[in-house]
Amino acid sequence: MLKQNRDYRTLMPNPNEFKWSDEYLLGYGPMDGTHREFVTLVNALLECPDAVMAANLEAFARHAESHFKDEDEWMERTEFPPRDCHVEEHGAVLKSVREVLEVVRQGDCAEGRRLAAALADWFPGHAFHLDSALAQWLVKKSHGGKPVVIRRNVVQREGSDS
Image (cartoon, rainbow, N blue to C red; front, side, top):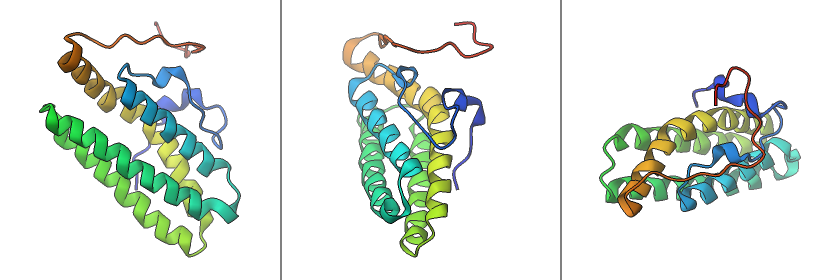
């Protein structure tokens, strides 16, 4: 199952909700768009009635396969140095999604909600650490500099100096 990074859940006061925040922007447009869709689909899993849980999880699984395939291809194409651990993490998430999808198809929607909560917990840490490094690498490779990110409506977290 997914590792949980509770330190990054400060954006989500309601554990049954996972909303997009510009704090998730990394400055590489294709990645930012995919991440916005990821958040939307995970939130749909958290909020949906049981009757559509399997369909929503299938939609998320398709998204995750495409999302991770794109990132894995970017890393391979640009020879991103720390790609192995990033690719392995994607593989572990996909394995969890596939396993839980089978359980949900058998009627255990609670397991689908637990997966959605774990994904909401996992994503910020993954994005802030692994994906931000990849975004910087991709922008450096394509434009020769670091990404410029303008974040709107981001509330400063307690204990944050920035």
